[in-house]
Length: 79
Image (tube, rainbow, N blue to C red):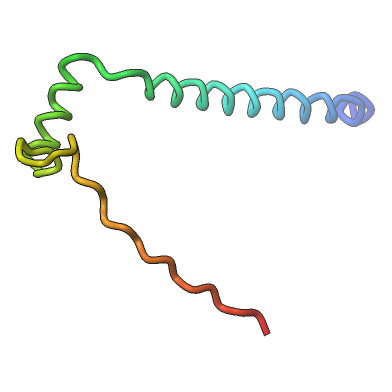
């Protein structure tokens, strides 16, 4: 029995790694599917939300207000 276990433990590790890789790839594919284009009802809701937050108004020449510019933080010099 000891000889059988010692012969097949590398196979068990390979199977576990293959299963982990499969689930990792499956999870990434599922997250990409959630980034599909929005349906019409979701798009309308997002547009209504943007208007209610004041990101879009009738008086601005641009369709949306630009975001505030972030000032970069100076990097600390290594000594």
